[in-house]
Image (tube, rainbow, N blue to C red; front, side, top):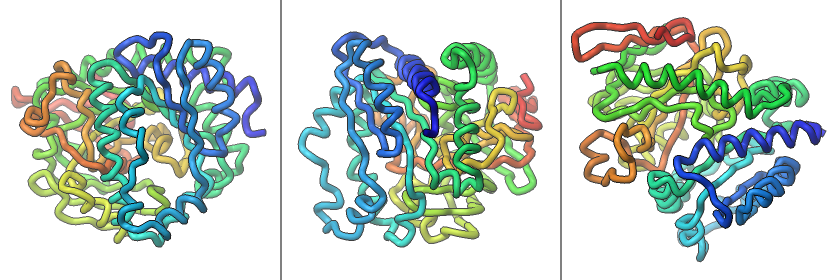
Length: 400
């Protein structure tokens, strides 16, 4: 057994903390919560479901298909089947109040020879469902969280034994503490101070410098920094969705990516006038190019994030973006996401954001959201509107 029953109960409690914290509105009896779980995480789903029922939630449980089933889908579907959305899906997503995803992949490379365009078409076909939940979230009607459950495949790809991998997951989520949810509440309070400080700075642009990265990111108007909001378990990142139009320079991801059944390594993106002008990668180059060409917004920045190593207990590559984008280690990390923005980084009322307003403010729209992680020693300098320069991040620590 990967986790003891006690650890499973603690993990479920942390997920419930995340679900409640992630939603700006309050849950009430009769709300609909969707629990989506990979087959390997069924023991965690079994620990979570009764807790949700005891809260008075209407729980919808869905178990995902196996890697073989997913491969069958892409190999055998015709064009209509590829973009098919089942009757009732829009109704469900338009009524959801909460969603918890238990990610437990039993293969990370089973789609490596599938045409990335087919994978992109599925994402585009299902984007309207994501738009529905995003609108509900902006109104405080919906919250979501997700987590990772250890599998042998994840451990192999990370170069760890299953036990060591599970120990990393447990430590990262504070499952070795008597009351992990209390620990997360404490981190949440501490990071709130840093977010307030960052959001108060009159920043014209951020300059990110490391051995392989030299990038300028423009935060844009009416932005706020978010993070450790309950959406991801674990999460130590502090992020915002910048004005994509101001992105210039080179960004390098020294951490590999496992994405949509593909492996991509050492991605280097060159931005000109806000868009990706050149893509390089030592492995998975064609996949990377097709992902970034998925739609008009896929080659633009949707998120800029920094992780303070003082909070994160993750110190090993985990072959999972959820963990790797929260890497602490020696120098912390930054990550850049190409694709969709997060509208809740708008400093006003996100529910009042129209498509026209989002476009005017430089919030990016795409079916893609791909996080690319850099763990090199770096300095992030804020160029203020006053003409001053302030180092906000150095050596993996926020300098506030």
